[in-house]
Amino acid sequence: MIALKPPALPPGGTVGVPAPALNYERPEDVRLGIAWWEEQGYRVRLSPLVRSGTRGYGDRYPFARAMDLMSMFKDDEVHVVQCYEGGYGTAEILSHLDIDLLRTNPKPVIGFSDVTTLLLYLAARAELVTFYGPLFVTMGRAFKKPSREWLLRLLTSTEPPGEVPSQGRPLRTWGSGSATGPLVGGCLRPIIQSIGTPWQPNLTGAILFFEDYAKAPYLVCEDLTHMRNAGVLDGVAGVLVGEMARSDWRLAPESWPRLMSLEDVLGELLGSLGVPVLYGLPVGHGAQLMTLPLGARVTVDADRATLTLEESAVLASSEMGR
Image (tube, rainbow, N blue to C red; front, side):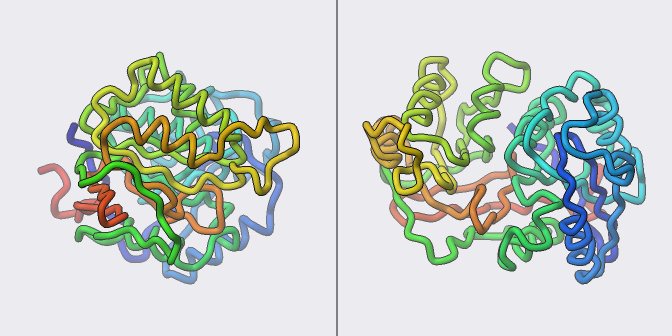
């Protein structure tokens, strides 16, 4: 699988902000996001829905949200598409998207959580490298400085980024050796929901990545068991598990069954695959989100406990069309 790399964000370029999922009324976060990008020397263009102030689940028209997203691809002055918010509803817009428009106007698309559905769709239908990274409303204050700087590096550098910073976190591994392949995945819930759809990820020879938020270990067990029973894990070359924020017993509600810890589940269901597995990189719903380029070639090394990005996620303008 060879994914299409979008062009790099140029100096002084424009970040377009559409609203494919539900969005919240957080005007302060919008102002902070705009301020951060402008401080780095870039411009921000809010989409019609974001500018209109439509908030919450008020816009129940998937077609309108699809048009909102596509307006960013039609706009030649927009260089990067950073989704406004996650939450719920991204899957509703997919049947309204013009895939030819998206494929012939490749741009870096950034988002996480519910936006995973859009990223999987773009990978399957447009074969486009996308970015599992911060949403626009998280740019101002939700994530720490290293997360924002790493995102900017991936969007602007045409050199291989190398090892993904662990920010001093202790990482857990299962298996041994290393595996190289395209990075595929996102938030676990949308991955499970993609099974049986045209955008179900193909993991043959790939490195599976997933993370989630407030997901009880028994639910993670059910999801991974479902993936295994559905044959989705057949042929996977390696696995990267990001930060499973608030997903273990320390912060769990009393109603959660306390049968296995999260590490018990991961060790039992992933350790048995016979491939290198790495757990704990700061990628997810925690205080840090070190952006990952989905579709780009990476190496997961269980012996060194590292994830290395083997190629840039973007192309220089001179390389486009080759």
